[in-house]
Image (cartoon, rainbow, N blue to C red):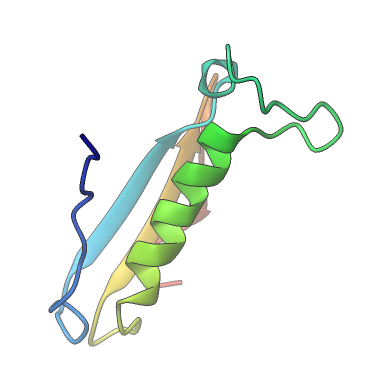
Length: 85
C-alpha cells in the first residue's frame, strides 16, 4: 500500500505562516544504503527536501500571502529561512 502525502492544493492564495522543523541529524541517513559520503546526503534526506520543495511551490509567498520558515536541527537548531524573509 502506497502512502499518500497531504498537499497544500487550494492554499495557493492563503494567508498562512508555515514552519518546517526538520531533523538533520545523522539518524536520517542511518541504515540508508543510498548514503553518499562525498555529498553527505542520502535518499531519505533528498525525500525530505523534495517534500518541502513540492509544498512550497504550491504557495504564493509574500507578506500578504504565505510565509514559510525552515528550521533544521541536530545538536543545535538553525533557522535557514525565517518567516517573512
